[in-house]
Image 1 (cartoon, rainbow, N blue to C red):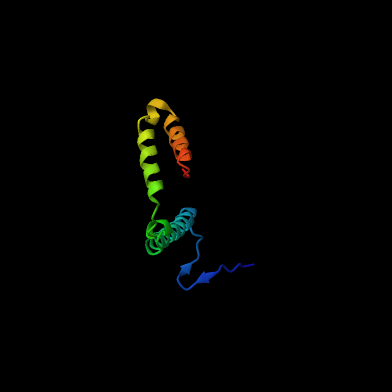
Image 2 (spheres, rainbow, N blue to C red):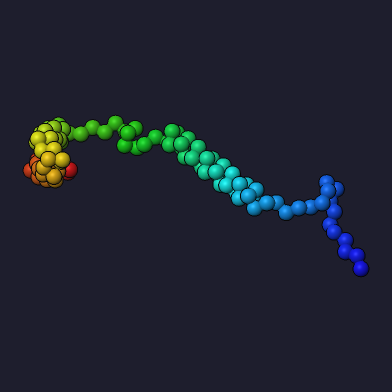
Length: 100
């Protein structure tokens, strides 16, 4: 009884080593990640950010409140005074009738 083995034109068939399969999968995944990153970078360059592109003008009252409240809060650095700066800034803006 003779068994015939599959023979290809290039020689006997062999299973690919596991290392080759893992390397191939890793290369495909890395290529996909690189392509996705490139597309995302191009998309960020092409699509303008609405807030940055718009010419937003604020009122003189808001500008004055921002300046005054920022100056008040700057007297109390976070590393020395904890949250005092933000509480002072928020209360100052509220006194001026402005959002934070």
